[in-house]
Length: 90
Image 1 (cartoon, rainbow, N blue to C red):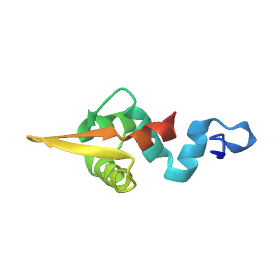
Image 2: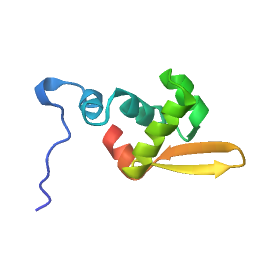
Image 3: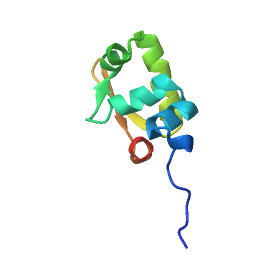
Image 4: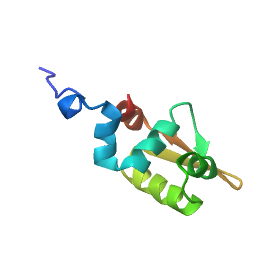
């Protein structure tokens, strides 16, 4: 009852490496960048060292996968992890 697979990376690799293997390094880094709360697309782009368009593309893919939500307030777009996104990064 309730048996599941452990969230451990193979060969002792850090869990972040396993997540990067699934999502790609930038998308995994983007999810980790949201660990302390919502961030704008521009802020995420700066943190990842990518263009705003690239950051936006990554957030769209993660939103489609149900790993983050996006809220627009005026001209600002804020992204926040969903409970599933938080679970995957813990």
